[in-house]
Image (tube, rainbow, N blue to C red; front, side, top):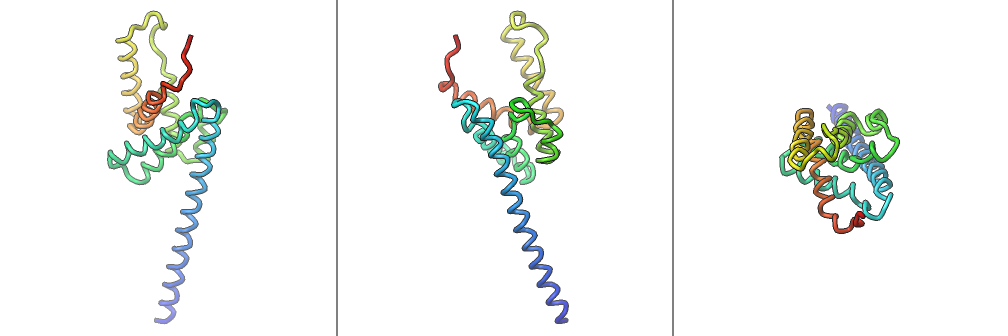
Length: 170
């Protein structure tokens, strides 16, 4: 009986230590993601903090939708990294190896959403057709993973909220 009590305490202590180590590892991973996002955002003064705000908006949407903690974490991380594939030489394989399949698929989905092309030239595409094309892109992305749309909408929301800080185009 005494041996069992000692073993149970040791197991509990080991589990506690393992949980603390996992929490520390998770925090370190998040710090790396934030650093990478901050580096990307530093390309000019208009993008400073953009990735952090997109991640926060994405997380709020996920929380309102009642997503699991695991989904919320993936959405938040993908929100931070949403511009990595288009703004750096990082590959989808690198993202998957460093941050997991779920985050990599979300970031890839957001990137691909931007790369879907219109059917005609800019002069041929009228406003209504552009709106229809944007809806088509969103429906294609939703068919794969609705979380991609959450992140893209958060990105667009932040872009709209910061329009007044953008330089005027000639």
